[in-house]
Length: 116
Image 1 (tube, rainbow, N blue to C red):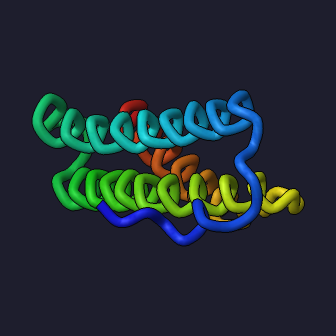
Image 2: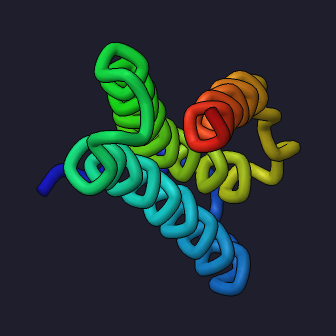
């Protein structure tokens, strides 16, 4: 397997920081899997939760957010590791705000569907 370019730059960071970065990556992956599992659960286990078009849109949006988080987690881990190796400031992630707002909107739609 080819070694990533960021591993060839700078100096090796303290293992504690690399392991913390790895734990954060795994949390993002776990959240991604939870969102996709939620989409499957809504579709398969709660067919009467909302009208079919609303349910389908909710499942698709949750699945897209989950897939986006998995992709973002991988890129983010590499960016953080590169910053650690080169003694740079850790990068800010603006898209996390957009993903959070979209997930909040999906939760609101699901709550309205359950209440209505």
